[in-house]
Image (tube, rainbow, N blue to C red; front, top):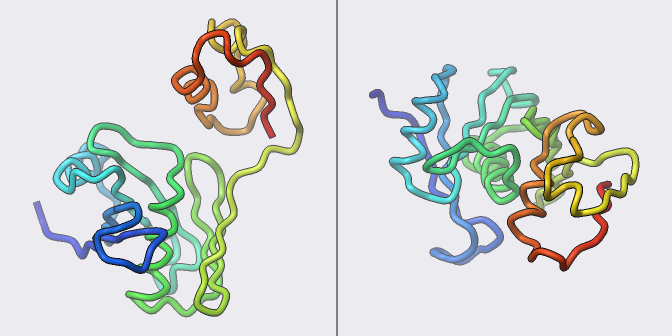
Length: 170
């Protein structure tokens, strides 16, 4: 397998070996999902990010994908922040804003002075569901939203049975 320029980052901190770690792999061409997965497994961090430039001249717009050692994930905040830091500060991107196309929708990161400002996906309406319908699978949340966000799995895994009656999505 060829070698690619990569960065190991510590997000949410300015102290080495603190914060949330992520690997950022700068790969000039698209690889297969299997290859992305193998690289992520080799790093063995919580996430490995792959910014895939759609505009190769200046990283104004690109695709961003995240892989754990075992699966691709739809959204990862700390790896997005780390990727943006690498693009703005390590490789010298001059654009004040980057738009990443992701499985969770477009994410925009702006450089403001020495800070990075990120947006996260929003849904236009509040929709309320009874949690038992979500947990027992009788409600299909995905038909109401533009892209899959895995919120029902998060609720199922993180909420003890009987502890949550209603769920509101925004």
